[in-house]
Figure 1 (cartoon, one colour):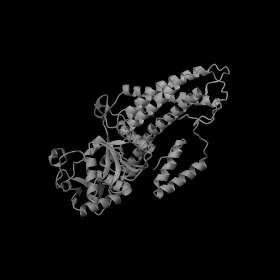
Figure 2: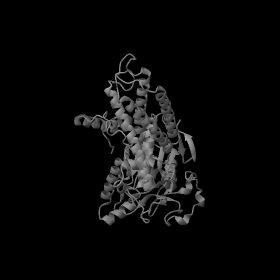
Figure 3: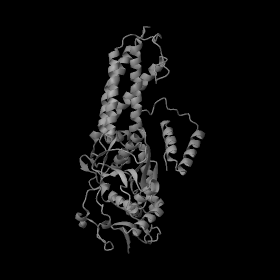
Figure 4: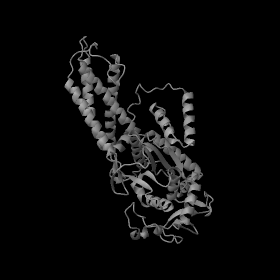
Length: 500
């Protein structure tokens, strides 16, 4: 039974999706004015893993990330670079998606840009004004926080006790806590609306996007801890005020902070690290494993020591998979054709020595079963990846020792028969271990089977183009379940598909 920690309830809850086996997941995406940093990487790797696991256990997940492609930071940076804001935003969005691709963060089904949802944003503003939750002033449109009695429930704050001195003073707002839905301006870039030329507020782009694709309520909303207040608090206020339906999101999930050598990362301290800078010195999968070695809700400390440990663990996992594949190839040479079952009879002569310890193989099969139970129990406990990893890393010692012993025993074949039951246990253990690592790879996506000779690369370009054309038509018809299925199957064949 899967349990998820819900920030709104401040406790773990049994996970029950709103629609049988279908999950709608939204995660706050980047503001594209600069290269993504390792804090971004931590959050998006974590939610990529969460989506992978949900799909592994049988859910169909539609995962959206917004792209904030119009913002004061983008405008300021574009002036510094002397380029148009839309050019700057497009440039850094492309680099962000390249960075995510290198980290195997490829589970997002739709990247939704703010500028492509301006009509939906205006529609939400219209309804908020009509329902009395928002008002227009000389410089924009604002959400009147005092009208929404539940404001503060996600961050567990009493809105009347907030330190208003920390908020920007604005004479056009009724109270300091009110936040912008539309900012009027005649300074380009701006967009026309019935409320005057201007730009959307930050918070409303997310609810406009999620309402468009998910409706007024959905399953999971994710992001970093730093977004709980005011961003996610504002999202709740906007959408629940519009729809009257509670809650907007069934499960709120937040990743912990990332520090560098125990200190908060910041440019002023000189410890700010972009993903591109990191990947100049480290393999992408080392960083991915480093992230997944800490629980997604816990703070994570980025250091060379931690990366070195992740590199060693990745090497151990790769070495174990390599040994299992080599052992499988060896079994193939013994004319064992079907690795999913044992098809040979006791009377057949394998030409092997009778020198196996049947008890050892049985003990290892039992150990494998127990390890799998620990692994999935950990994953079902709010995606406890460090505990799941510890289980599988400990088991690699047993697997490696077993394979080394079997290779040693099989070196000197002298025509003697091996007892059927002994061979069956050896065969079963190697197959079940390989299957378990394949399942692990589907969830953690660490590139452990990149050189697997079972992956076919001789699919014609015409076939690929046809499948892509079919997928595009399915997506236009909003048949996301079938289009996701085709994408996932193509990914399994080594053909990476990126939805745009």
